[in-house]
Image (cartoon, rainbow over all chains, first blue to last red; front, side, top):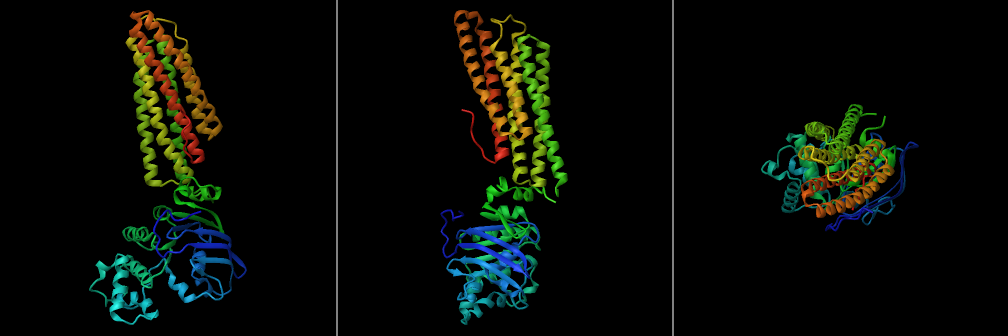
Length: 261
Length: 218
C-alpha cells in the first residue's frame, strides 16, 4: 500500500522497514516494525511520549548507533540503500537522509557558512558553486528574501523560526532525498510553524519525508499517511484522511479521541 | 480519560439531538392527528411549535461548530459531530413537512372529508415509528436497527402509491373533490418525504458507526 498517487517523484526514494526491533540496554524501544512508505510521500508519526517515534527516525539514518548499548534487528531499505548492511556507504546514506530537529540548532558561524557546511564537507570548493548552492537552498527554505545581504551575520542572530528554516536550508544544501523532521515546529510560534508546514507541503514529491509531531492537526495538514506508534509498536498505518476520520484500531481511536488514561 | 470536559459536552449535544428528534416525531404525529380529527386548534399549535424545532436546530448547529472550532474532534468524535450536523438538517425538514400537514388541516377548516382517512394515518404511523427507530439506532450505535428502519421505507412507498391511486380515482369521479383531493395528495407526499429523511438519519448512523457513507434509499 501507500504508493505515490501518480506524482512525479524525481529522485525521492521509497522506504521499506521489515521486522525492525531496537533495544536500549535490553529495554525494547521498537518491536517488530513493518511498514512501507511510497516515494515522495509524507508520513506523520504520532503517538504518546515514549512510544518510539524519535527512535524510529534515528534508525533511518543510523544516528541511533551513536547511543551506547543499542541493539538493532531487522532490515531498513531507503531507495537503494540497505541501511544496516555492513557494506553500506554510511556517508552517502547520511547525505541522502537529512534531518531537522525540534530545537533549531544552527552552528555558531555565519548564515552562509551554516548552509555551505555540508557541501564543503562533500568537497565543493568553488566559491561560485557554493554561493549558488547556498542561495538555492535558502530559496527552497523560503529564507532567502529575509537573509540576502546578511550572509556574513552570525546565524544565532536570526529568530527561532528563521533559524529552523536555516536548518532546513542546511539540510537541503547536500541534496538529500529523504527528510526526517523530529517535531520541527515544537519550539516555534504559530506563524513560524505555518511557514514550516507550508514548506513540507511544497516539498512533497521532491523528497520522501517523515515527520514526528505531537500536533495532531499538523499531522493532518501535512501528511499523506499516518503511522500510530504505541509502546514501541506500530499499531496502525493508513491514509491520513482515513486515520483521522475512521481509524481501524481501537487503540488509535482512543488516542485520537483522548479516551485513554 | 484525558478529554473529559469535551466528552461531557459531546454527550450533552447528543442528548439535545435526541430531544429535537423526539419533538419532531411528536410534531408529525400531532399534525396527522389534527388532520384526521379535523382539529384546527391542534394544527395551529403544531405550526407554532415549528419555531421550537428551528430554534433547536440553530442551537445544536452552533454547538457543533463551536466544538469543531475549539475542540478539533477526531476519529469517532469527528464522525459524531458531523453526523449531528447533518441529522439536524433532516430533522428540521421533517418538522417543516409536519407543519405543512397542519396547514392543510387549517385550509380544509372542518370541510367534510371525501373519504375516511385510513392509509394516510397508516403511512404516518409507520413513518413516525421510523423516526423513533432512527433515534434508537443512533442512541444504540446500531447498524442493524438502522437497517431495519430503512427497510420500513418500502412500506411507506407502497402505501403512498396506493393513496395516490385512490385519490386520483376519487378526483376523476367527483370533480368537486379535486381541491381537497389535491391537499390530501400533498399530505401523502409530505409524509413520504419525512420517511425519506428518516432513511437519511439511518444512513448517517451507519456512517457514524462505520466511517463509511452508503446510499441505501433508492
